[in-house]
Length: 514
Ligand code: XMP
Image 1 (cartoon, rainbow, N blue to C red):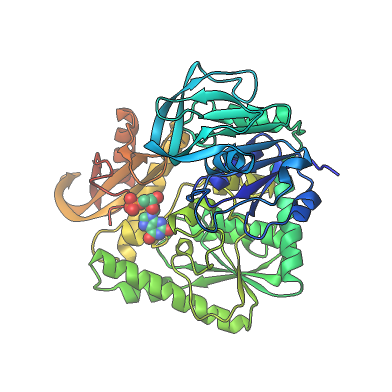
Image 2 (image 1 turned 120 degrees about the vertical axis):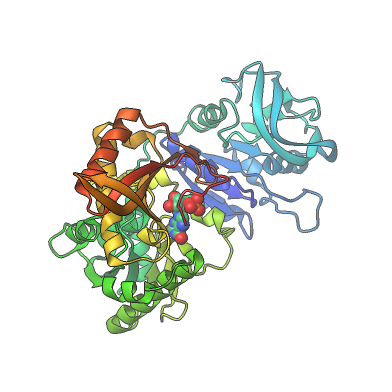
C-alpha cells in the first residue's frame, strides 16, 4: 500500500540531506536510506509515493558501484534520478554512460528542450549547478531528452509513460534556478503527494524513535543555552521526561543574565519535565584563566575545564546509557561525517568528554538545518527569545575579552553587550544582522569625563552579515544607532571611556576577536 512519503536512496552525494530538506519544504515526509544492502522488499514495505536516486561520487562502471535492487523500475512508482542517480537509471535501463570529454562543475547554462514534464518551471536557458565527470551519452529506449548543455548531450531525460525522470544537474542546491520548483513538480504533481507533513510530525516521529531506543535508560545532555542544545533538551524531555538530565555549566563567560534565563526555562520552575543541574563554575574558571593571555591557550583552558566539570557531574549521576547532543546537519557536514561514519564526540558543545561512561550518542537534530531547528523549537514551546538567538561561541566571552580574562572585565563586556543588543533590537535590526556583540579590547585610553582625566577600557562593537560564517562582511548599522549605543555604553558602563566599531570583513578578520 502506498503511503504519502518519498524514499530517497542515498548514493553518498554531498547534497543528499538537502534533497530531503527540499521534499520536507513541499510538506511531504521523506526518508533517506542508504543503497547499501537495500532490498526490494524493504522498498515495497516503505511504500513510497515517489523515489529519488541521489548523486554520488562513483562511476556506474566502477567495481562495486552503488546500485538499486532489481525490479525497482517495475514497481510503477515515479522515480527521479539526480546526477549519479540519473546515470544509474540510464545504465540499468539500457542507456550508455561515458566519461565526459569535458567535466562540468558549478554554474552551467542548461538549454531546456522540453518543458512539458519535470522542467515546467524552467527558463529556456536555465542556470544549473553541475558536478560530474561521467555523462549519459545515449538515453535508454522510451526516454526523450529534455535538456542539454554544450558539453553534456543529456542534461535531462524522461519517460513519462513509466514515470521515470532524470537530471544530470542538482535541482536541490540554491544555485540551480527553479531547482526547488522542479522537485516540487516531481513530489506534488508527478508523485501526487499530499502536503500533510509538518514540523510537529517530525517531533512526533523523533519522540517515538527516542522512546524506542532509550527504553528505561538514562540520558545525559550538556546544555549550552544555545538554540541547538536547547531544542534537543526540549525534544528529549517530551520523549523521556526525567530520564533526561541536563547539565548546564555556567563558566562565568556567558552573556548578561544568560544563566538565569536558561535556568528559568529548563529549571524546576520551567515548563519542561527533566532533571536540570546548574553548575556555577565561574570562580573556578576565573582562577584557571588568571594570567592566561594567549588566545589558543585560553580556549584550551576553557574547553578542558568544561570537560572536567561535566565529568564530575556525570560521575555523581552514575552510569548513563546515552549521551545526547544537539548536532545539526551543518555540523555533520563540517566535521566530514557521512551517514555511515563512526559517530564520535562533537565540537558543538565545546568539546566532550571521551571517557564519560556511556554506550551511545543520540543526535535527534542530525537531519535538520538551522532554520528547521528554530521552527522545531517553536513547535516545542521554547520562547522566541531563545529560539531566534544568534550564535554564541562555546568559549563564550573568553574570546571576546582580548588578553587576560578577569571577573571585572567580564562584567564590563556583559554590560556593554547588553546595551548593544537592546539598541539593535529597538532599532528593528536584529533580524537583518547575522551576529553582533561587544568585545573588550585589551587597551586603555585617556579620556575626559566631567572635569576629570580618565584612563579606561575601549569597547569594540562587531556586527556581521554572513550566510555560512565562513566569510562575512561588516554590517552597515545606521550612524544614529551606533551613536546611541556609544553614548549609552560610555555613560552607563563603569570603566569604559571609548567605543570603536569594527569594519573588518572575514577574511582577513574572523567574526570573533580571538
Ligand atoms: P570565527 O571567529 O571563527 O567565527 O570567524 C565563526 C563563527 O563560529 C563561532 N565560533 C565558535 N563557536 N566554539 C563554538 O561553538 C568556538 O570555539 C567558536 N569560535 C567561534 C563564532 O561565534 C561565529 O559564529
